[in-house]
Image (cartoon, rainbow, N blue to C red; front, side, top):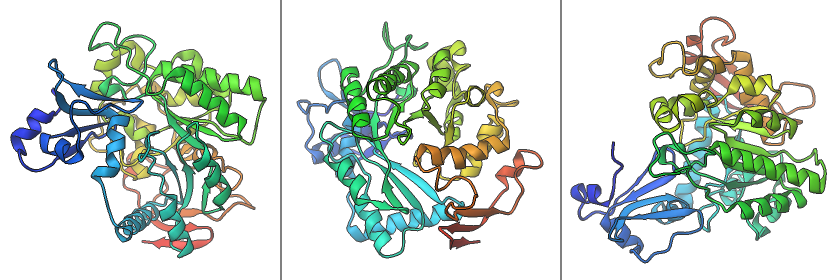
Length: 419
């Protein structure tokens, strides 16, 4: 019921520097020794889009939110080049084992040192013939656009390219940092609507600048008001610069929405990129945060498709594991892949069928990556990216999906995994 803090960590680890990371990646907790090692004290300023918690006496609690947490990650995690390359090779091998042939690697946070889109590692693996998954990179969108523009020009391989830019507009509901139109049901204070991680005027400017320079925007929006404002900015960009069909804007997560914005997503051709495993992380917590009325529009898969919205599925790894079969099961049943709960599914009206879920993981995600003309369906002229499963997941009960194993993966016509 109470988040960790410097005090609780110090009680167990008084002498060893300790950092803990929340499951959603948006919050970090440090003990006193950890903050000392990093040179953090009560006068350390929080970066834009982040907060450093203090108690009523102005002392650090050890809790760091959003960009204040992300910008410390590169200092907490420090590896040699050989270790980094091996980590990426192992991840790629695991992706291929699950039949995954393409990924989108998006910036973790728009602060210096927290991009974590490691084009240098991918480039080394590509040169060695060891990049066995297609990578679509989304570096941070900032006023200083040198990095994304250079990456777009430099990486043009079908296996490695820069297909847009990423930014964060709000946080997560569990910590009340997702931005809502109306206050949280269990508000921490009067008028608690969460917060934006980027100033609205700054985000509007960045959207217009990205579209002007022919860059697709991919933006983290969880709360309904963050989504609403982003659609306003994308609509304005279209009015100012006209339709640019070669761009593909995408919103990430879209956990709860204002009803009218579902139709706006379709009208503006904005992809809804969502992660089915997220809805089963903590349904009870979501209900406490938002109340019964608003949860009816939580991850509205059925309404998205009925309104003609392009739906893209993924896992948001490492927040959820890379296993796509669990996500398919979540989307089809609205139940946990681990215990089958709740009976009948959580908000069951938003269930979709297996074909629709598979299409969201394949064609929909290819659209989000602005690569639907090359991948996402099996068709003449497209790349031979194929996986073969040991079950026909389109027949039988949904539980068949959880029993399914991938037995063969091909990327670009080359076998990269055989089970």
